[in-house]
Length: 166
Image (cartoon, rainbow, N blue to C red; front, side, top):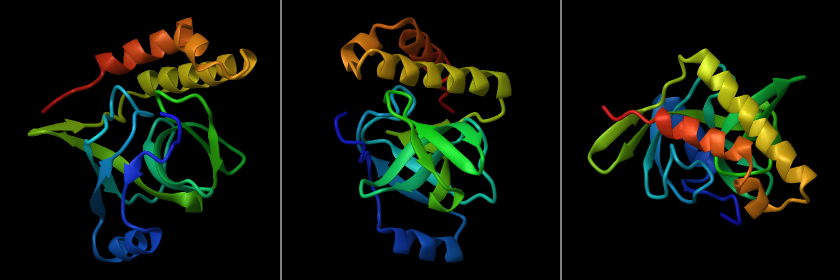
């Protein structure tokens, strides 16, 4: 994907205002960092939550890159560690940087509800995602080599098996 700015949404101030009048809002996804679950052009329904858990796909403000929509792969010492399912780096963020959680995706005329109830599945996804990141670093940030790794292939296959349309 190159740059990680993967969505087209209103400024943070507008999102914070939206939080005061509604519990959710929609954004249009831009980029490929969350393939295969989230695709370029999908509409994500974002919900404001009191707490966020391992495996949640969250919208957050990241440095000067703007807003990202990535999965929480680790929580430690008051930080959330997020990574795109089809990306290779991990972003360390504070809870106050999170703007909401993706709860569903609209793709064409279909709705995909994101399943956060399968705890074992989510833990495996997060563990594999961290392994992809470690492999990426160990092999000098070589994206192509990383895409041929066992971890990356297994992660992508597991994610493809869980996409559910309703």
